[in-house]
Length: 367
Image (cartoon, rainbow, N blue to C red; front, top):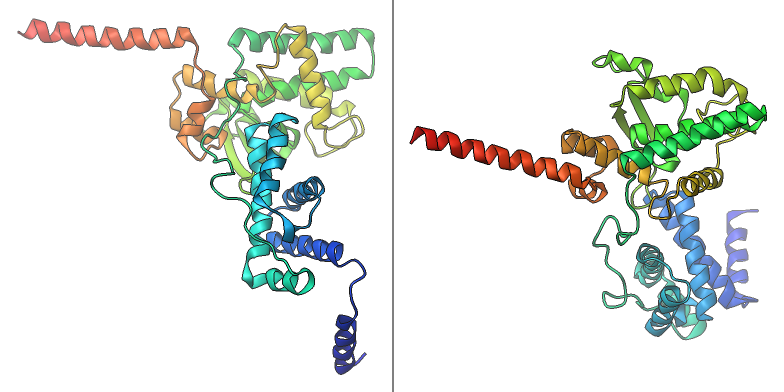
């Protein structure tokens, strides 16, 4: 088709009314907003999650974006809090998605205001403001409901995981390799202060030697490739140095005895089908062990990472070093993760008091 024919075709097509103008316009809005976010560098998964929030609000409000109101927003989020019991962080993520879409529609550069006036005699307007949205004040918003493991609880968790391995070996069942995998995975999460998704994606090639710490063998340095993304960006990488010498033997034993029993994969902890081990399976295993040792929801899988931070601080490692190990941008975030024991605080206070008394005695002897 020639260029002039394409132009005439478009002109003719635009003269016909849309069959379902409201729904078609809404879908075009979503498509344009997706493209805008892709250009900004946001991940496809983040974009789709945000789009699902818009769909949910659209369904709840029973109206299209050019008829959305502040009252609809307030009613939706009041329902999310009072009925669905969503956490503050969830509410805020929903509000961020809705505000991003609303800002896109109201931006004159995209022409949606004029188009909606032409088609519907109405137009999108700002519906989220500082008085009806939540502010992000704290990095961690769990409200004190979660905590790290104590050292004895952590040992109990690892012992329970090892008991499962021994029981499966005694029964001579296929579950032995999976139990061995999960036992090792839990320990590695603690050994390097890893998030659940970070440890799931580990591969053998991520471990290398630390030339300054030969006692760790080839497991002295870990390149974390799937670190938590921020603001919808791609995964962040970081380098973590091994600090617990006992961990090298655990990883080596898994690679020599357990890993060969599962399907071939580049992943360090694959599933029985050779795919990436699922978060659902890990969560189920963790909850089972947690219940078996008498702990409740106050400790989660993420508590392994919290315990790592806390125990390193208690052992006297520099706070900046710990911050860099876990990949926090700010020291305040690491401080939120830290929950040192009362025994540690007592020793710290005693050390400070003893130093003060010693200084006073030296000063008195000079006089």
